[in-house]
Picture 1 (cartoon, rainbow, N blue to C red):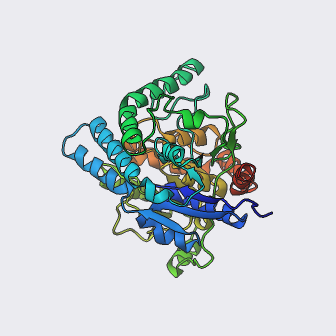
Picture 2 (tube, rainbow, N blue to C red; picture 1 turned 120 degrees about the horizontal axis):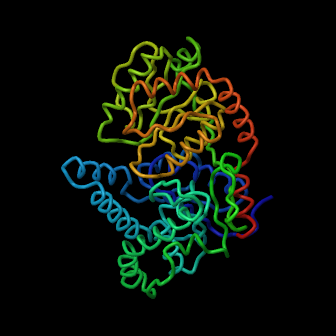
Picture 3 (cartoon, helix red, strand yellow; picture 1 turned 45 degrees about the horizontal axis):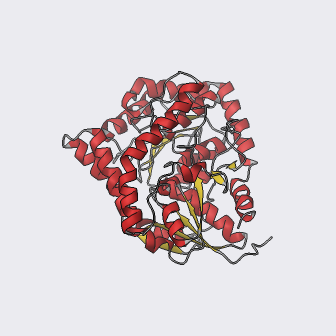
Length: 422
């Protein structure tokens, strides 16, 4: 069934490769359903988007550069909180300066969490629809778990609910002055007096979450406008082929363990990389290390380790024995879908979606407890690897969950929701 309304839909997806890839899958689903669709993203992903067959508008800045600057400031002695604040201010300034070029010609804006405090306001100025579609729940209040970014304390429902109120007030203090200056001086809009979370709290439009209700059931206190569609997976390009080296390695012995931390970087990347190599040696497993985005820095490896810059998760992960990664929503979805045990190594220093998914994986019984990168050791990692390979109940639960997630159509569900209102 083709879309009947000739509205031009623009998906705004900014950030890292992991932030952007699910939105490309959503864009392709909308395109196949007959929607007039394009993507606004960072310039370094222009070729990636266009190779998928989607029109693309870009801005020149990228989030990784901003995060690299934050890491440099911390290394030079600046406090982590101040460096983080500088990074957020830089990001919001660049986003608001470049948004007009990304939204030109659009009738509907679908935006990731990264646009929460900017996109709805420019949509208000232009008089067009804006629809939040996020990879994780960051600020939608619930009694089920605390707000991302707030302390993770075992104090129950009342505390969980309170964290959202506190975070909203802190966000308001930090961001409302700059927001209202932008609204008045650039957008020529009135002062914003609503909750900073208002675009997420609004019940007159759908709120899409790109994760599985099987892996994470919908909290009872979320409204009917909240849709857990299932993960948005982007298939490997039809033209993609594994290298002869990769095929030979996979055929050359028992299924390996996949280890990759995406674009996550830390002050001790060398320590983390050596820890990974030492744990692989200690356990005697075969391993594939994904080094392409900087999360691991390994130049030489023994014969039982294969180094890859990048490879489509949907092709590789079903062919490995277990996965170790940073717990990004997209990577977590891919490893759960593959039906293999998963260990999450969160890099974020506070309660984040990485730690959330790490704990969720453990609660589902499909992986060990997460190991924060600061606590990563050879013995802890070796123990987790042994458990993922030897715990037959864990492996059975992972296989069953993988079957269930593979039966979902996250993109199709999201398209159905959007078709109902566009």
